[in-house]
Length: 573
Ligand code: ADP
Image (cartoon, rainbow, N blue to C red; front, side):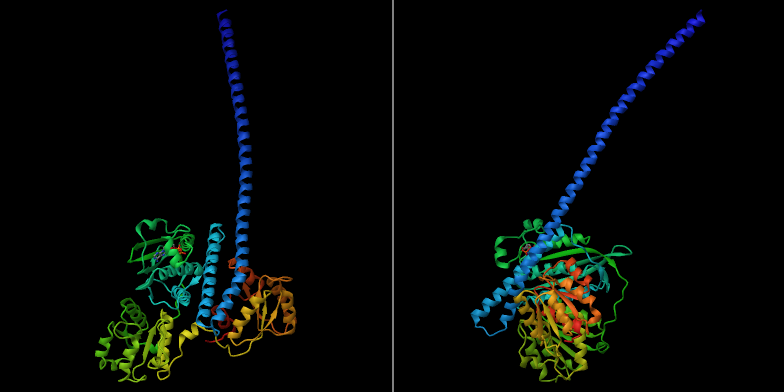
């Protein structure tokens, strides 16, 4: 009885336990089910959000695309008439005008250039903002890059008399890998600012390099000026858009307050930083450091043999300039002494017979370079002691004064240029070398007549391109659209087609494609160069992709046209 009672009790207990367990399982299942529902909901919610996000992203991307498209179209539309304004006023300056007229014309020209600068800035900023700026990496030489930058800034500051100097530290390798255009853009911006805000003294551009690891290094560029400086409390916001120290400087100096913001964005894009130190009325120094890849490309030895061991004296009152010139000459293996006082040179006149060459700065207090040369020439002829005059374009000596020199160079002096020209002095001691500012700022006669076709629908732009071609001693034909251009190429063996990108009936890209298709039918396939108002890299790439050789950005300048003749027609000037 007890046993069965026990068993019954057990059964009850098991039963109860079972019920309890079943209940528990049911509870759990319920909980799990409701959790499942929650999870399902959650998943669905997430899915919905994801779709919404994707949609929003698409909308945003579309908006960004539209914005960039709008900006590119707008910039095109503005650049086209600007092309005419800048081009034609530039040509007008050189015609016979009375004083007042020529002042008006050059104001129009300058304002046009300014407007173009602003448009370019806005376009650039928008492009960077929308993440559409692609960096292009290539092997580049820092020395050449800086020399190009100096060309750009000094070409637009002809009447400027602050010393513009540069030094590249020995730590900088001959080549690095980076984006030439963007590094240049940053430097041009910083140097233009320095020029704008500096009335006297000097602007020094220095470049240094530090190793980061095996493949990368840090490129440090500094632009230091002796200008008006920046007040302490304004330094913080300097790199924000539309920030300018005070409105009155804007009126006085112009500008949009976009330059530094663009610099900052560009530098950051290149994985770097930009900073400033400044003191009011003393000057400012902007430093940017960016990461660049190393390159093992070696420098082609660029030391004219004829300079090795030559004894040279340099006279300049500016110590920085003296230092840089000395370093440049010493790099070429020359034996250098320096003077910073003209009177010391005059005192040493006897000793100078041991020297092979003298380099004299034009502008110095007390006695200028020409006056020193006049004294030296009483004792030494041009073959006995060749002399080189350094001057800014502004203070160019007259012909008679120049006659005392074997060579005159305009500042800023570029290393390769300096050495090549000094070498030429020794090869040609008796003859005067040609003036180089001519070479830099003027057109020249190409010498032979090329067959040129200008394909451009805008009549004024036809005229601008045409007038410039005339400056190079060229005549040209005109086609009003791509179709006409193709037809004309079938008839005439053009050497060069300047092809506008956007034309009615058939645009420049299509016309180029068609020309390539009928290549075999043509007696001669012309060099096709795009004239594009689109400053966008992708547009320029499109030109090259369809088979054009190069592009000129509108407004086309004498300078860019000259470069084109040099590059594509091997014209030596
Ligand atoms: P912008 O020069 O077009 O006005 P930036 O962004 O290049 O625009 O410069 C912003 C402001 O920073 C300038 O308006 C000027 O007040 C100040 N600034 C820039 N560079 C210098 C400099 N080298 N010396 C003094 N002030 C400077």
